[in-house]
Length: 194
Length: 194
Image (tube, rainbow over the protein chains, first blue to last red):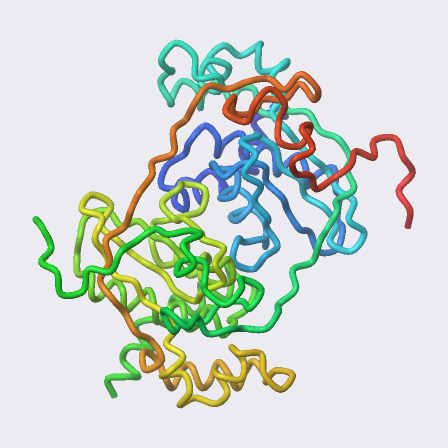
């Protein structure tokens, strides 16, 4: 009964999450239980900031369940590949870190197989069902103090090659024109192959 | 008349954006005109992926206007500090890159002053008004072909220090336990200062 009350309370997020993320992935469902747990432990603090430790799924959970978004800077994403997140009081910087606890996941063979990518994977619907049954039983948490290095908004430069603006801290050339990083080439006027 | 029709069509996104981002920032408003322009030039392709070239504001615009989210991987974020974004056909990999064109912005003193962070800044409401008047007149675009390096989901390891999982490609220790990156310390049992 208690369990089903929790899922009932979170139903809105399962729906919102599926819409925002494109589908209700196992990671999304675990994440919703994680944020819910973190918020319960935090109580009612002031403004809350968030850190997630993987680029997969968890950023979307935080964005639908809290005011933190990637673009407003209240959500930070670490590319650590760890299924963990921290919500913390922006002012006091103490908070709660919740993580998927593999010792506990061992009791749930489908979740374990899915997460560890064993035996060629398992059907997603079955994993989601097992997560819905497990709820918080696969999670652990700890209290943490968060270190913050505020991002300075420094002066803006114009790149002499492309003519576009970028932070002067990059140096004279922008990250693309300096060859440090790239993701496209311009095909203006070229015929697009079918 | 044409201009006000465009803003009318985008009104939903101004409202959604303000809600998702916390407030209607100048960057959000410019971004909404950028995505709208990119979508118009793209026409009706198949699935669309997105790249934004700054962590500020633009990730939120893409997330509210398209099915691309940070957590589903269809939105990639480059930390270049450039106010530009690309929408492209996932299959064919050709698309449209739209950027804030500083040559054009020079005709709009408040936008210019805000973006270049000159003279101690300008009142945000005035910047937003000028952007609402400018619409696409401060933007330029080009056709691009996007390079994609698909992320492999490799095997998962358990870190011998913290006992948590992480991608085996990190090495034996996870990114935090190896000292490569960090953002918190555990304060379980410590008394929280007021």
